[in-house]
Length: 134
Image (cartoon, rainbow, N blue to C red; front, top):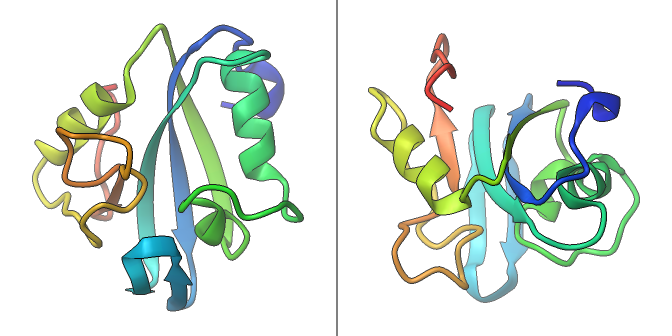
């Protein structure tokens, strides 16, 4: 979905983030994080002004203050796409993705430090995964 097509409504989204190179960073309280090249899905929510469109636009900017775990990835990404789910829930999206064959949690707690039920909101996606489940 292009940035212009994203709804200004509240809801959830999945960022599809492609890393072409390994990424090694210290990420807040998680400490050192190493991610292999590949495709990752980050499940997030947008409940504030501007809804999903405003939040995803922020994620797409290269230059920004590091505020969330995912900001470490978006600044280093070779490509980013977004799938919007107006009225959706980030935890439900993460659970649905994690239930697919080959999807795994690369770093426990990544993107879900304020969540009591999810292992992580960042998931490593296998090549060829069909995202029609969203």
